[in-house]
Length: 350
Ligand SMILES: [Zn+2]
Ligand SMILES: [Zn+2]
Image (cartoon, rainbow, N blue to C red; front, side):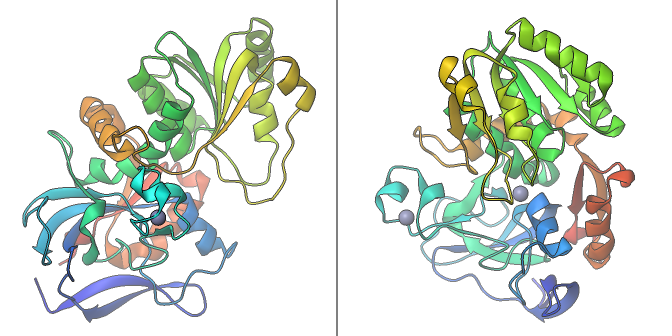
């Protein structure tokens, strides 16, 4: 490991800069990882656009995988040279939620890449508990996709999606498309509503049973599906400020489940209470991933990536070096770039 390493850091004026710093040895129960792949996430873009202020000085990046380059004292489960994907949740480790595997709702919950330095760096130190060895056929690029995919794996487990059911996914950004992959892995029939042509294409590549465009023809198809009570589970993946939760709700058959994965930036959105009560629709909130059922969602996501490696990789549409981080964020933000998942590959650096 070199003494000096390159990292992307948020600056005081909320922009990104590439800076050189000292490489630190991992502390007790920590690992040092040589980052090979790190995704630009929608939540990183919130900071980039200025929706929320980032913490100045912090290295962003919570969708990461790489090679363990050093281990601190007390680390046993992984060794130097292992390829690992990082589940970026920080937690206290002692509260009742942490102890039951629900560490994603720990009151001391934090995120690697927001509350401590993340993966947009040549090397990063992380708690050893966050590292998952990748299974056969899952390289660092696929390993970094475990983060968005695990959000859907968690939600689908909460919604108890079964293989004979039909899932309607509203939105075909990287969360919507990873939800599609989760639906395929459940064996469910997957129908997805996609706004942009490149997202529609991506959904077809991933094996969507039906892709509905966000236009007039799409609207009439949606009304057919509503009338035939075809949708068992509706998944909202867009969030933001729109009425997409209501739109997803209204697709459901009686006794259907409405799964909320998208992150809304406003405090209140509409549901139709009469529709919800009359049909006994179940509303299921879902946040990140955990190990609530005795097995980590991250591990399941990594196995799904191993099973669907070839199609999953098509989600990564753009790859940049660390020095080109500005361009990477702009590409991720600009839908006309036809980007789905933009990755930085710090190991590509000279
Ligand atoms: Zn993310
Ligand atoms: Zn806790």
